[in-house]
Picture 1: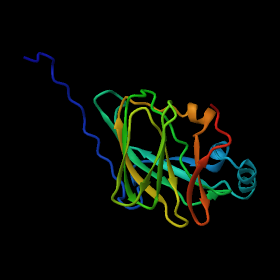
Picture 2 (picture 1 turned 90 degrees about the vertical axis):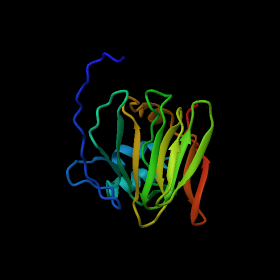
Picture 3 (picture 1 turned 120 degrees about the vertical axis):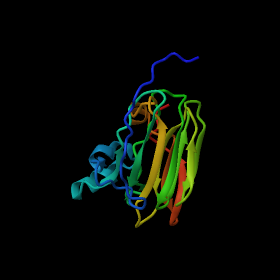
Length: 196
């Protein structure tokens, strides 16, 4: 018989638009090109673009669920259309601090890819189209990439509350692969700036 006293946890209620991913009650966390420029392979193109405009590359909504084991964190992510040189707009990407935790993304609107890689060197790319879910296996860093010229890529995500985010590894090493436009369509190529 369980003798642990019952605890009361308040439910979290949030709103978000199922097409745009935007919330009326939550403030987004935003990443502009100035915070992302080092992530792109073509540094000259990034610098040139920044002299014109510090565009919003992506934003996301953290819905405020406790960051503890047993809870499920969730939110929406919106990656805006655009390119730096030939490389499509993307999120920074991250590993989880607790490496053996997975994540699920559900595409609400737009078109793109989830780029994934693990520390052992395997990489995968899964396509996002509306109504399609992408499961990111445990141990895989992941990054959303928008390959549309006109539409934002909007996803809903959920992961274990205690997983945490390791952005530093990607900021230091980069991803092994880049997603670039080649002959009018997306192509994955080796990242010349990747640090082993």
